[in-house]
Length: 278
Image (cartoon, helix red, strand yellow):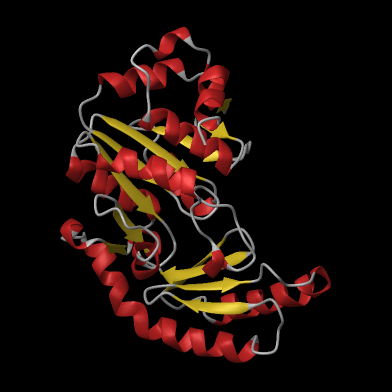
């Protein structure tokens, strides 16, 4: 895994030569820092402006891919050119309908999700720092604010639920202080991105993410896209990494304001010149 700003020239050269580009961007931890209360997460002004410039250009297609619900994502962006994939690709904006069978099958498991949701809410009703988020086609069990002395008991209860429902149509995925619970179907962020990438027929693809669920995108699109993880990890399938969301903003602003003769600048100088504009 290489630091992006040490190996940026070939990527930007390919960007300039391409005529139809697509960017797949995770939300939490990528476009906005992880916060204790997910409802308070927001894209800062500099990041939003860069996204708007990118999405407004006819040669670019910007797609936000998140575990959040489609309704949640759409409420956070005003640019009509941005596309959205919520619930790890189980929901998509209307003009990307016609989803494959596995994604449609997931909807049949929603009643089972409702049963588990009620049991989780009752179990953790009086646990400070733990809450269940219903996203229609999936659940998120957040524990970002749980005190460390309760971690052991919390994870024991998680193991209990996983064992009790092991034969059910649901799968559990661990993220950053959150358990994502969704239908056990052959569909994830990686397959969803493959589907949309094929449908939009781009000649340049860039993928940005920071969490374990984003690894599905990195691994499935490795030969077709530039894959970038936010935060270095030896276990990641991504080819490159950026240090944090500020680094992401620098990259997006660089792409949105790319000088015609960027080769005369170093990667560090280019990144700094973009950051200094705001």
